[in-house]
Amino acid sequence: MTAPVRSVRMAYNRIPATKIIGEIQKRRAKAGKLVAGVAAASNSDMFKGPQTGKPNAKKWDHHLSEESKLRQPCALKQAAEFLKKPGLVSLGGGLPSSKVFPFADLSIKIPVVPDFSEQATAKSGARETIGKYDVQDGKSEYDLSISLNYGQATGSAQMIRFLTEHTEIVCQPPYADWAICQTIGSTGALEQAIRMFCDKSRRDSVLTEEFSFSTAMETIEPLGVGTFGTAIDSEGIIPEAMDQLLSDWDEGARGFRKPHVLYTVPTGQNPTGATQGIERRQAVYAVAQKHDLFILEDEPYYFLQMEPYSHEAVERPGTVDEFLASLAPSYVSIDKDGRVMRLDSFSKVLAPGSRLGWVVASQQLIERYQRHAEVASQGPSGFSQVILHKLLDENWGHEGYLKWLMSMRAEYTQKRNALIASCEKHLPRDIVSWTPPAAGMFVWLTVDHTKHPDHGKRNLEEIEQEIFNACIDGGVLVARGSWFRAEPHVPLSGLYFRATYAMATPENMDIAISRFGEAVRSSFK
View 1 (cartoon, one colour):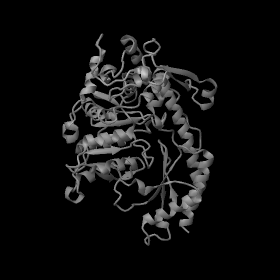
View 2 (cartoon, rainbow, N blue to C red):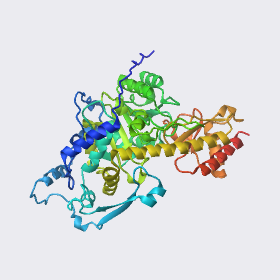
View 3 (cartoon, rainbow, N blue to C red):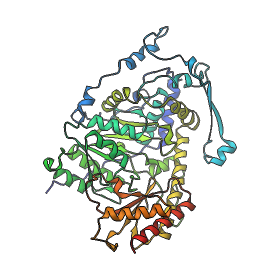
C-alpha cells in the first residue's frame, strides 16, 4: 500500500485583470519610453510589478541534465551589453548595418477592438505601417532596424515587456523570482526543456497521459528518454493512479529510473480533449510534490476554455475580469515551489505561422533555458516580434488582447457545438460515445470494441485500421487513437478516434461525421 497523498486545497484568489492592467499602465507611465536598441539585453525583472511577501522558488540543480549544467553564456551575446555605452564604436560583433536590409516598411491591416470579424476588418480595420527607422523618427519604441537584426535569445525587450505583463495578469505566479523567455513555439520549447531535464545516460524518463500529444512523444523518444503513460479519465490525469504508478515503480522491470518529469496538456488535452479542473490540478501537483516531479505544463489551448455544451443558450462572460475568473488556473498559478515550466504560444489563438511563444518558470530555469537557446534557436523571428508588438502592444493593449481571446472562446464554442450536434445526429450511440470537451479543439470518440463481431478474434489495431481505411475510402480523415499512445509497445486498451472542429465548416463537419458513422457501421456489421 502506498501512503495517501496529502489532500491540499491551495488558496487561489485571482486579482482582477483590470486592476493589474491599471497598475501596469502606471508603471509604464512612470518608467517613460522604453529604450531598447539592437540586441538589447532584457529580463522580466525589468517589467514585473512588486513581488513583496512572496517566497523564492526552490532550486532544481538535481533535476538538470549534465548537458544543461555544462552550458555557459554565449560570449558574443554577452558582449552586446556594451552597445548601450554612448559614443562606443563597435568593431566587435557581426551585426550587419540596417542599411542593407531590403525592407523599408511593412504594412498590415488589423481588427479594431472589439470588431474582430473578417468582415469588420475588411471594412473598417486599422492600417498600420512598421518602418525601418520608426524609433529614430520618434514614431515607435520598436522598428525594423532593431527587429530584423540579431537579438538576444530571450527575444526583444519590447515583447519581453508585453509577455511579462501578460503573465502577471493571467498567471499571477505565487513565488517572487519567476521570469519568461520567448521561444519559437512550444514544440521547440519542449525539445529544449527535455534536454535541460533529462539524460539518456541516467536512464531518465518522462511521465505523461496514457494518450498524449504524438509530436511530443516523437520529440522525446529519439533523445533516448523513456515515456510512460498514466491513467486518465474525462478530467485528465487521475492523481491516485499516478501516485500508485510512481510508488510501485520497478526500475529494473521498466528499464528506466522513476520519472522525475511530468509532461501534461491540462487544458483541452490533445488528443482526448480533457480539461483538469482546479481540484484535479491541485491533486496532481500534490503527487508531483510527493515524488519530486518537475511539471512541464503545455498550454496552447488555455484560452479556448468554453461554456458547457448545451442545447440551450449559455450566458457568456461579459468582461475580461469575468472571462479570466471563469478559467481553470494554470499550474503556474498554484506553484508555490517553482516546480512548473509553462509552455505558452500564440499558435492556437493568433497564428501558428508566427512561431512565437514563451516559457514561464523560475529565474534559475529561465537562465538555463536561455543558455540553450543562445546556441540553438537564438530566439523567435524578428518579423513575428515586430508585427505582434504592433498588434498587441501598440494597438490592442492587454485588455484588447483579452477581448480577442474572449472572441476566440465564443468562436470555438460554436465550432464544438456544431461537431457535437453532428455526432448526436449521425453516430450509433450504442457503439460510439464521447464527452463534449470543455476546452481545446478535439473530441475523443470511444468505440465500444466489445460489441464488434470480431471481438476476441482480432486485435484492436486491426479493427482500428479497418475503420480508418473505411474512413479514408469514404472521404473523411480522423486521427487514430493508437497514434497517441505514450507507450506504443503496449497493446491498445480501447478503440478511439480523434476528431477536430478547428478547421472545417459546420456543413463539412456534418458530412464528415456522417461518413465516420458509416465507416464504423460497416466494420460492425
